[in-house]
Length: 91
Figure: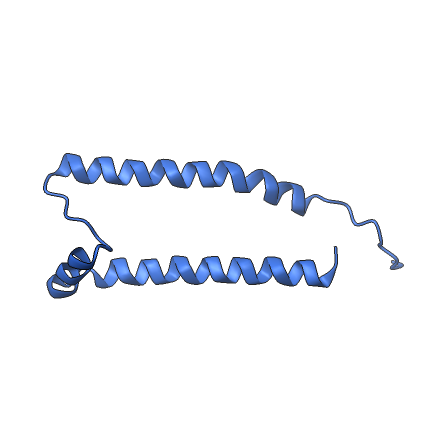
């Protein structure tokens, strides 16, 4: 695999990690009532009046995470287990 292809994969993983980190910071900071209200007003968070609504919301996110995992894991497994064709080194 070329170094250019590897760099593209590294940058993609870095960007996805930054997005996930930013989301985590927003959720953690969302505990403050004023900031939470602001995020509800601009649409980042939505108010969930009952525990059933909250549970339904969390289950929906869980299913999306599962679908992403089931798509990404086989691709990652194939990438990790791919044999190198141009291995010219001696042990």
